Length: 389
Image 1 (tube, rainbow, N blue to C red):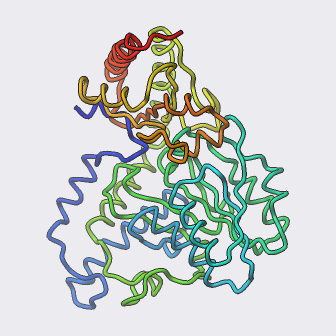
Image 2 (image 1 turned 45 degrees about the vertical axis):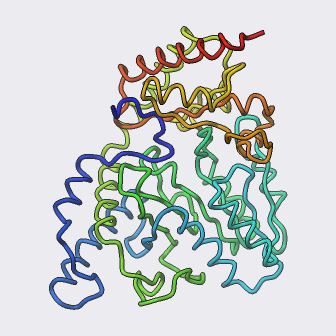
Image 3 (image 1 turned 90 degrees about the vertical axis):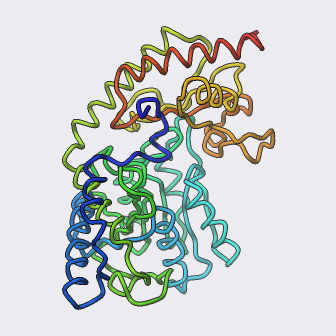
């Protein structure tokens, strides 16, 4: 049944190695902050995991701080830098296609006096470097950009963006939401030059409820979000989620080891899927880029003419057991349409006809064959009720 899962951008199943490692350590109950042998064994396991997390982005172990996931990491970075900086008004630059974890924090900080600039994107979901450059002001303190978009897969030129920002003002903090790219493309924080980077385990076949925030040189020039017992080198209070951390570490170890073969597999599967789609179904459009180096090959966003995405997703799920994500909410209210697809300039009808398909480790050719057959039958059935004019 796992082969019918085409929503890897939402979350991923546990890899068998990750599950096995967690089960092996499930009785490890010591508190990593304790000085006795039980606590020290727990701490040893935690630091081994931290090393694997650091390695997958070429960071130092001391640069990695565990959190409850990508949302907390992003909240910690944006709120932490805001509250630690006395520059007012505090100017933040982000984009119109960020994850809600970033956009909602920016909206919140704007109520506290922060000035927010939302950069536009082109029809393929890319930010223009010139727009970023022009947005920088004397009071700009923070830039937060998503490395790759979760709905359309566009990969931003982060290294170039950092260089542009730092050349204008080296004191501006650059944070990257890298939740969607870990394990999919090579990440080297030293080459990128970013100050902070957020990541989550459940996007790379690890457990839910655990993530990490990378801080360049381990420098904590930001206020902490959670106060408490001084865990995570005094940066995040609360007893660490040890078992999840161990699973996260194993997932990062696998992601590092299998990066190239998995990436090549997904590229091949994407081409196979698009070829099968073209030969099977009419009247559809790809939202965002179709091909290119600056694109996550695992992500395909498609609009089907005269089809409502909600109906298509339900039919695929209930009739064929296939899981996809819809590109719009079950509402006619324009405010609930995908903000990403709106930013591309797509029409309301096209957005309401869009689904997101994302491949992963367990996807193979026979799964795509089954999916295309099921998709064709579903589209034809729905169009028979409202034929394409």
